[in-house]
Structure formats: C-alpha cells, structure tokens
Image (cartoon, rainbow, N blue to C red):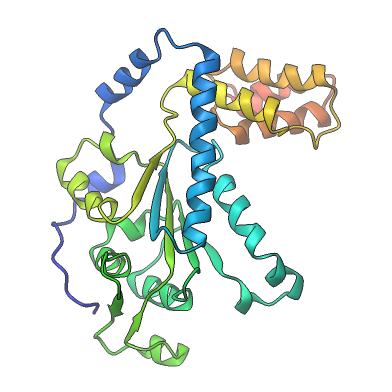
Amino acid sequence: MPKVITVNSLPSKAEVKSLAVDTTAQRRAELALVGQTDEEIMARLKDRFEILEDMTRACKAGKVRAMIVTGPPGVGKSFGVEKVLSKHDVFADVANDSKLKKYEVVKGAMSAIGLYKKLYEFSDKKSILVFDDCDSVLLDDLSLNILKAALDTSKKRTIHWNTDSRLLRQEGVPNSFEFNGGCIFITNIKFDHVKSKKLRDHLEAIESRCHYLDLTIDTTREKLLRIRQVVRDEGMLDGYDLEDEAKAEVVEFVEANKDRLRELSLRMVLKIADLRTSFPGKWASVATVTCMRGTSA
C-alpha cells in the first residue's frame, strides 16, 4: 500500500457515475454572455487556449508541477497540450527510442499500482504524464493518495508502496522513489459545478495541488464560436480538398443543426467534412442520418 495520507471518504458509485453538474451554474454562464459580442467571446477563448499552451510549456520546463485542464469534449484540450509536448520529443521520435520520450498520454482506466509504476517511469525532472479522460485516478482512494504524494508542495516528493508486489518486482520498480516529474490532467469534469459536496471535496484534494485552467466553454454559443475560430484562424479544414465555400457550408450545417447533432464539437466538424468530401452530392442527407439524434435507421 502507498504511504497513508488522510483523504475524505469516497463518493458513492452512483455519484461517481452520474457526476451530476449544477444546472444553475450552466444558466448563470448563459446569462453572463448577454451583452458580449462574438468577437469578445472569441478573443477570450483564444486567450485561454494560449494560456493552455504557455502552462504546458511551464510544466515541461519543470516550473509548474501540475495542471488540471477542464472543458467539454471535443474543443481541443488534448490537442493544445500534445502540440506543445510533441515538439520537445522530436529527437525521441526520430531515434525511434521510447526510452528517450519525456512524456506519455494515459487514457482510460488505471489501477493504483499501474499509476505507481507509471509515475516511476516518468519520475525524472521535466518528464510529464498526461492523464487524458482518465478520471479513475482522481476518484480512487489509493490512486488519490499516490497523486497527493507525487504533487506535494514540499521540495522532496517521495512516493511509497509498502505492500509486497510481484508485478513491481518483475518490472524492477522499487517500493519507494522520489518523483520529480509533472502531471497534467485533462478532464470534462468542471470541478466547481459538481453538485455532490462529497465528490467536490474529493476532487479538491487534487485541485489544491494543481493549477486549474477552465477553458470557459460552457454554452452552445461558446462551442459554436470555438468551432468557427478553429476553422477560420487555425485552418482546421485546410487539409481537406474543399473550396472556401464548401468549408463554410460545413460550418453552417453544424450551426443550423446544433441542437440535433449527437455531439457539438470539433470532432463532429471533421466528421461532416469527411462526408462533404466523400459524398459531394448528398453529404447533407448522409450527415443527417449518421450525425444526428433520432434519425438513424
């Protein structure tokens, strides 16, 4: 077992599964946009994503120990982080040597012992572990204890696993080590909008040890403006064999059907762009069937 650190009791399985959000906060976010122009909102979103890249660079340089990035699915959270980190690992990619790689993206579920092992692998200074939609490490008591030790504010951060483990022995992982790396958590959970007090208290155990970056994309209007911004300013559709008019048609289709699409995201824009190139004469009807709720066969 890891070194014992007191944590709040875990939320119930039902609370973890639902991750219910405070709908009053959602309504407040919508009201806050009243009177703001599209240009003002897009400027704010651009600033947030620039901060995301700046903070990622600071993590890579070892100046920032840990960061939580929160925002809805498909707005570019992961892309912004990986774009920065990948530039630093060009040599490892050229050499085709994973041992030289200084960051790794972890997705999906992860056990406490798996987390301990992964932190050991990336324990060197300027090494970064990115937990992308890997919320299990935030909601499991043993994993949380390990993370609290890894992200402690003291100069020396030592992590312990005090139970004998054949897996760790086989992998050559010691039962304690000093962690000098950094962590980035990318999540769809907006911590301060979670309704359950028990769950909020649990998440605050990590939030108190991290910089917290909310990308402030809380409404349909903000999601649409983010889509327009990435297509217009970052050339998201430039890789497609589409004229400017066709690109505009893709964005207009998304905006016109914003309430019916299965997901309002950058990923959905790319799906529809795929259809626009694959079925030039009937792409809209195909998108209606495959990308909208209640219209599939």
